[in-house]
Picture 1 (spheres, rainbow, N blue to C red):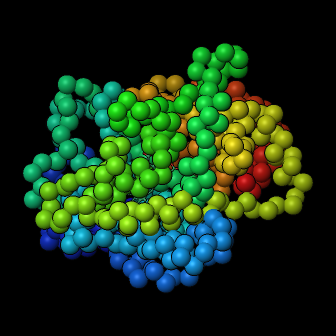
Picture 2 (cartoon, rainbow, N blue to C red):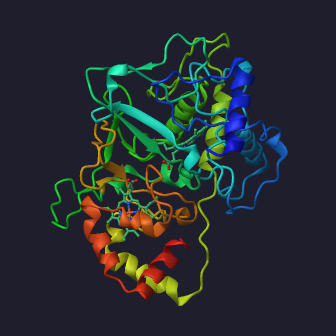
Picture 3 (cartoon, protein in one colour):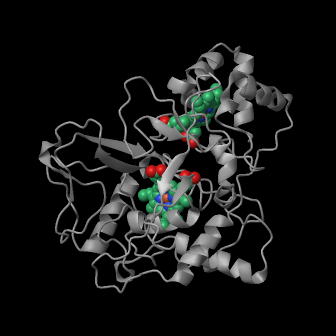
Length: 395
Ligand code: HEC
Ligand code: HEC
């Protein structure tokens, strides 16, 4: 975190809680708990980029739809206050825009905007201390997040992905995702994609498609989940298990109305898909061919139900040998959703934890199921590598 942001963070802590939160020795504080000043307010009338441009709508909207889109954008941009319910019981930031901002509102986030996940099943030094702090909490909160000290713990950084085109990903039929599954590697190509199955209540199973471990099925679920988990705002519940329903602060729940949630969802699902670079260089066609022959397209499927996202939305283990990460039901340690590559190769860093600064570095971090693809890439001539990277930067 840069000094500038650290200052803002301290300033906001004072604003929110009246005192600077300081970490007790031995507690684990992530550098990723970040917030920004209230520079996003009043955005209702901010200029709307043209249809298809970064941060613009996905299609031509009717005047009524445009109003709703702008109301949703204002909520995404708004720095929520404690008086609105922000920050209880905890928060990572006071707005969605604080993290999703590159190259425009709704986009990706830099390394300092990673969030942390932690849980059992991995290794973390000395879980005996018993407590974790991965989010901002007011000093009057009764307790910090407690470890279950009977298991060993793992902390995992998660990089902020872009939401551009998320509405189209939301609309892909489950059958199109399941069609690429090959859990037992029946075709013997070393690649064994598996869909994440999420119980959304009452035994109903849906396919996860959002988040680094495909842990969230629908965009509306992510809107609730992020409002609660990132900002500490309660939302109307729909029984699917993603809403923070009540948080014990004096503000009446739900802190966001159904109308506000609908507006936010409309904005999220009508954000334009990433815009291709439009290269006319012959390198592009050469790179596109290599993307296929090298084997990238086995997982980064160029198009799913007509959506050119360059992902199969399935889980694969491409982690380095010995990697220890979060173990979630249906998504063991090391398994991540193939990230969509559209528009992605210009918003460093890359990989779930942001470990790669460049696209080439990301490719070199492919092991396991993608071992062959990394080796094929390394065997390319420099001119071929350049063509492949040119293609990736253009999609
Ligand atoms: C502190 C930074 C931060 C804030 C604030 C934040 N996000 Fe995110 N967002 C992330 C990270 C990190 C991920 C990936 C999380 C994961 O997979 O574990 C993510 C993922 C998402 C995704 C899924 C994208 C995909 O394709 O997988 C959506 C949708 C989303 N956020 C919406 C929101 C909304 C809406 C808000 C405000 C209510 C919000 N986010 C606030 C960091 C943030
Ligand atoms: C076996 C499936 C598979 C193959 C084959 C594969 N990838 Fe990936 N790719 C993944 C997964 C899974 C991740 C995320 C891993 C992580 O975050 O730890 C990923 C991540 C990436 C990223 C980082 C994206 C981001 O948003 O951070 C890039 C870039 C990428 N792959 C490009 C390629 C290229 C180029 C090839 C071919 C040389 C390739 N991949 C082959 C599954 C695959």
